[in-house]
Amino acid sequence: MIKVSVMYPNSSDTNFDIDYYCNTHIPMAAELLGDALKGCNVDYGLGGGAPEEIAPFIAMGHLIFDSVDTFQNAFGPHAEKIMSDIPNYTNAQPKIQISEIKV
Amino acid sequence: MIKVSVMYPNSSDTNFDIDYYCNTHIPMAAELLGDALKGCNVDYGLGGGAPEEIAPFIAMGHLIFDSVDTFQNAFGPHAEKIMSDIPNYTNAQPKIQISEIKV
Image (tube, rainbow over all chains, first blue to last red; front, side, top):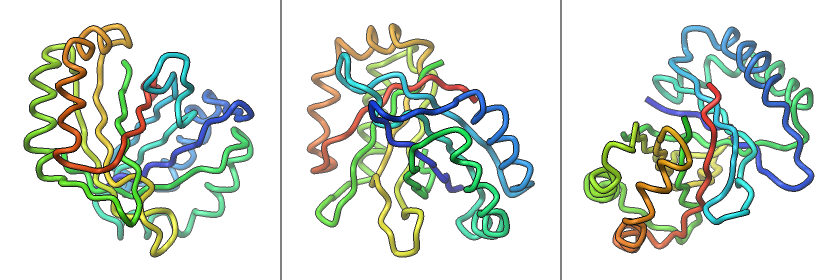
């Protein structure tokens, strides 16, 4: 299994509408990705490792697929629609990571 | 529920022993954290969002707790032992993020 992590870097200027993200963006993406999407998780940043430190990422969306191929085949045809929704909930530019789920 | 994400930044100079991490470090940390630890997941970076791009993080460990308080109470007494094991598997300095699990 692989995980696609979409990580939104945080700063004092970052805004992020977590309600829109959870209730509109993720359900829209999940519908477009269909059965290829095996699981989904959203984390909202509370803080960093030291007291008073901000979270490195204001939010992270983690999407689980069987393989990189099934992700690419499911995401490719809908990439433009999914990505063009980003300005509706944040001014951050996400970092993307594809990982193998080891544990 | 909250998630503590321990994220190891990647570079061309980064080394990371994923077998030691999964089979020695995480089990040792899990035993020390005890019942406070509600779940654990390890991601190993395969790539970034563009072809040929390296993963932003060589590995990420995600630890789930009921609350920030239960994490701090469980981790505090064992922080030195857990952190001092890091050089046994990597030369990277982890970024820490504490998140609220929204979805």
